[in-house]
Length: 271
Image (cartoon, rainbow, N blue to C red; front, side, top):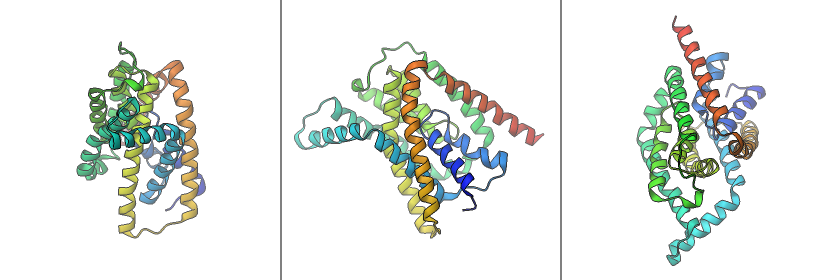
């Protein structure tokens, strides 16, 4: 891992921010390499910063997770269901489409994950889609009113996050808004849905790391995990407050500007 403390800090902060904000992590991961010539952070570092994000989202929603898990267990053992039990089942169901597709097409995703041109176009396109979703005239339901149809729409939309530049959180929030949920509900479901996705991805990458026999500097990894977790936790907290007040417009504008900036960088290099 050819990274000093400054580079490790910057990359861990980028992970903490982009994992949950609707601004595309793949678009930001390539920036230090393309603009500054930094070396690739490697698989070990990727696993570490994702562990940090996982710790943050589990810590922030710990009460919700306990409630959902307890309701899910009761539904399995007694057959009794309530809003919490149904929501727990919907989270599990919504995870399946992207999990299955990601398992079989992980190699294809890796091949195109560093394509600046693709990331630029998808960043712009999906930010425009988020703009219309945020202004969609729906019923604006709370999360407790989740149903199977909405669960499946959000779950299948998450498959699109495998396309670099899409943003997993962005596309699931977009789908949630189009399904008629309020901003906080769409964001919260997206964050809870991130838990099994990040966990399974971390396990998969961790297995690859062990098979490769990669050497590990545990102090570096511990620091990266700590920074990523702290930034991710703060990001979730303030993001939920921000969107309730002003909506998604700042992130939409940011993604469009970033997309055109990436196009400029790409074509300036071509020319």
